[in-house]
Length: 337
Image 1 (cartoon, one colour):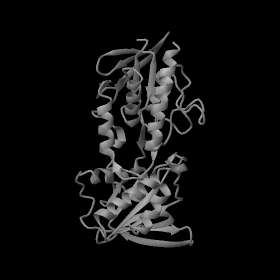
Image 2 (image 1 turned 90 degrees about the vertical axis):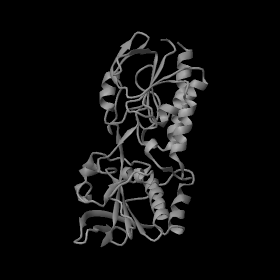
Image 3 (image 1 turned 30 degrees about the horizontal axis):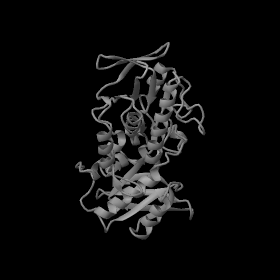
Image 4 (image 1 turned 90 degrees about the horizontal axis):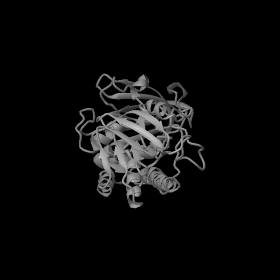
């Protein structure tokens, strides 16, 4: 037990942490509630800003963690504190004792149906960023027209929104909207593509170049405006009403497809796990780190560490970096036992 490390969550954070721990001589136990590894990234098509394959990243990690003990379709039913670690009862009937836990349970996406004014679940041609990623990956979706003349993207759906109980920025939505807009232009070169945004927030390496490229090379139009209402015309198209906040004028745009950029929110299951482990959650519902500057991967409980979007919205590079940092911290912690 003294060397047992249990990783709860098999997205890219948990997978990269498992890879790094294997390199450090440990054999982690990776517990994943779903039937496959990779988390949200497993369902993405390409990654920004280099447009690399998400499938290749997940496949590479799967190969590199082959030496781990991987438990799929497995949930943590109970978690008890021991004198020198933790005891976990799992849904597969087993009990695992460990001296260290790494929580990497990721995030959930805001349910766009809660924003009724945008028409998701009401109008056939309104989809989410998650739906569009699935379509890019080959999943047929009758809501995506064969040859759209115009497509709109609405940023910050469920993010920076007090009415949605989520005042925080999702960090990746602006760049994801640009990535998806570019991919759509590659599929439908003659379509007009609009992005309706509150503020554009780009901070990562090559992100600003990504934005400029979208305008210059793909002709994607960015409108700083608040969308107030989406309706359906008599011929089945969508009519979007918004205020152009730069000019102060109202505008109407007819669209063949509307994509809602659902924001990142806390994982739906995190509250139950936090209660079992005795760890704290923050005001936004994500797990609370000891501090947000120097100890993001550390919890308020000895032997429990974090990695990835369980503590807040993260990009892929941030998630991978945190996973490696957590693996080193766990190795150091075990060395001192």
